[in-house]
Image (tube, rainbow, N blue to C red; front, side, top):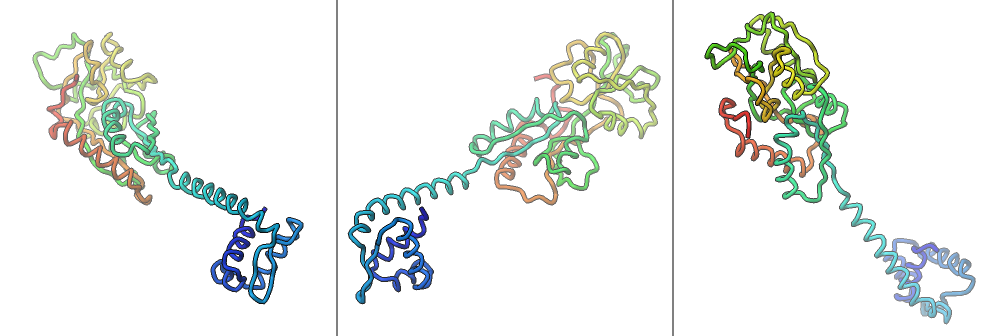
Length: 303
């Protein structure tokens, strides 16, 4: 049964006039008359008595009115609950991050964020290669990325940390007391390239000094490459987050000249940020300021 017709019936009966009711419900008087006629045909008996003094309920209409009021109140409650649920629809922030950042940064960042926005869900995705976060952002498949700086015009980039890169060498490598590893010394050695397009960052470090690598692209994770170096199967180069906590079986020596990659956070430059994403950014910047040193040389490899 049409709740609108019942609502108009109740209003007209309460006011005793179609004219007064029409002013409230926004229908013409003739329109209300037609609607009430249709309602009476639907129920099968008269609901209103019409006279020069106005209108009033018939005996049958008066018997139905308590149930009609209860029905309309229940219907209003239902609509209010539907509206409230729709307005409180859970927001989901999609985050794409390098595995090293997801492992070492995101647990603390998400802990802080949940305390501020407990009603917001976070979908954290670890990517397979260095360019994937930017591709996902460009295609609208993620909302926030954590990666190293790349040349993508779609990204509104916030620099967070300059991460130093290290030579990964077998324990018995003859350093001769040196505290740094010249990039030129990689030439001619079997270089195990970490998986995930990390060659972009490695080549950016090598090209200025003219080093050409005998690189073997691996299809294994960072930890496996480190274990392979530890068994004397080659040398490699990685960043501090990639090697943190995995350095027992290898030597990790800063390269010379120093090689740095910029880690940061990005959102889509043409997408309006929600309040929760702004809160997430605040958590990230507080974490960086409180937990990470300004000088990457101060960051310990293990913790």
